Every structure is written in structure tokens, then in C-alpha cells.
Amino acid sequence: MNITDLAAAEGPQFSIVRVFDAPRELVWRAWTDETELAQWLHPFGVANSSITFDVRVGGRYRYTMTNEETGEQFPTGGEYLEVDPFDRLVFTWGDPDAPVAGTPVITLTFIPRGDSTELVFHLFGYQGKPGDGFVYDGWDEALTNLGRHLAGEQLG
Image 1 (cartoon, rainbow, N blue to C red):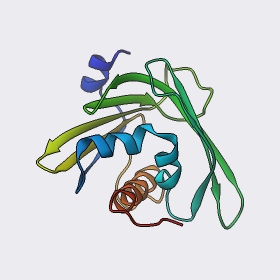
Image 2 (cartoon, helix red, strand yellow):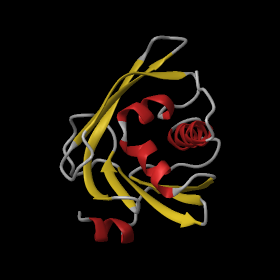
Image 3 (cartoon, rainbow, N blue to C red):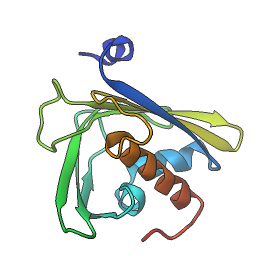
């Protein structure tokens, strides 16, 4: 499935839209720089214990989240399908070694709004909704962490 087909595809999916009080270049860097990502890319109560990102088409990324209470680890990763600096980032999301075909895909669209940035986060491959205690809520919390990070707050 190519990127154009994905946009029109039917199946489980959801979007989260956030506006961040930061220029698009800073929001982009928060998604593409390992040091930045390590600080916010996790839901509450979970920390990143390892992280590597090769942000280029065909490049792969991997991070392992660890539940701070139980120690359970969640290896996550995928492959970059589209890298259009400051505008759009598309990548698979799931098992770090999963093939592209059949793996959920995240599309990030960065829209300038004056000195702010609207981020449209779209995940194809999971049905999510607020309060699901799973994928939607995990990404919602991670995006809250992103906003706090962009505001200069120290995250635990």
C-alpha cells in the first residue's frame, strides 16, 4: 500500500490534532532528533530505556519503553516511508523488526499557524478512541509530554 492509497484507505484508524506554541521547525526536530525524542516519546509511568532513529526514507527506528512500576519492556519501532522536512513524516509503527506490509502506519502533518504549529497525528491500523486505556490514550499522553517538552518543562 503506498502513501496515497493509505490516505483513502478504510480500516481501523484515528487522528489526534494538537496545536503547539512552537515553530514548526522545533516541533519537527522533537520528532526527528534522538535526544529530543528520548525526553518525551512515552506515556506517563513509562520511560525510554533505549532509543535509535535513522530519519530517512527506508531508515529504521527503535525504542524500548519500560514500565516504571513493573519493569515490563515494550520494544517498538518501524521504518520511515516518507520524510518531507517540516511538512510530513510517515512511518510504520509496531514491532521493531516487522515488515512494512501490514504494519500500522503513523502520518504526522506539521501545519504552521503563525508562531505555533498544528500537528495532525494519524494512525492507520488501530481503532482508538479517548479513554481506551490503550493506543489512543498512550499517544494522547505522549503528545501531552511533547507539548510539555516544547514548553521547556522537565519530564520525569
